[in-house]
Image (cartoon, rainbow over all chains, first blue to last red; front, side, top):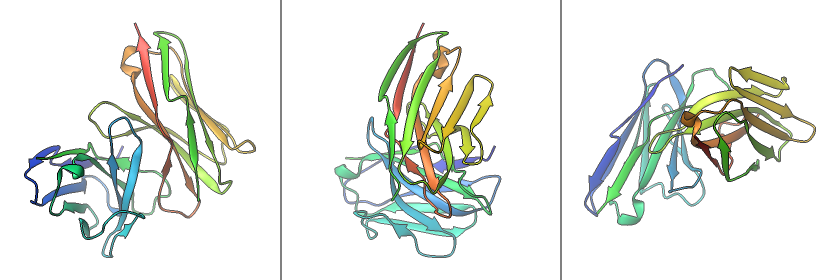
Length: 116
Length: 112
């Protein structure tokens, strides 16, 4: 299967700082990557769709200036949580779709963000 | 847009018994239906999927069935084992769309 790597797996930061999470497709090229947020005991909430070389498409209610997404290459997308606050603490998960594929998504291992 | 409903929210079965999780979708244009297993603190892992041109697919102890007329699909796990304990999510995608729509999840517990 395809491997998606997410880094860091856990991060703790102070309120007001910014945190960057990386999502890499290790053995395939991904024209489209997705970023999700997951609260405890809940389903995955799509935050944005990231297409290589273009601006991300954000879901309704997600602040694009707070959650900066960059998809600079076919194997890397980054999510930066700017000026983080305790309410931004969550589990962030990325997923990627193989170039040319339809439907099938592969997920990273997730990143647990804790904002103090 | 597409809406996916998943039931039950929690399921507890004895080891060795079968477990069935059901999902319904709203948009008849949906054509791809994956199932994901998520263990605590980890990302979802694709365990099986089915496309709309197929009614059933099986992979060892796991099977998925699709009823396009009724717009529902189900995950069947036979001979359950403790390591099957996890949260399972169904999802659907409309043909030509980019994003998956997920169900609410089912927390499956296998009792030894």
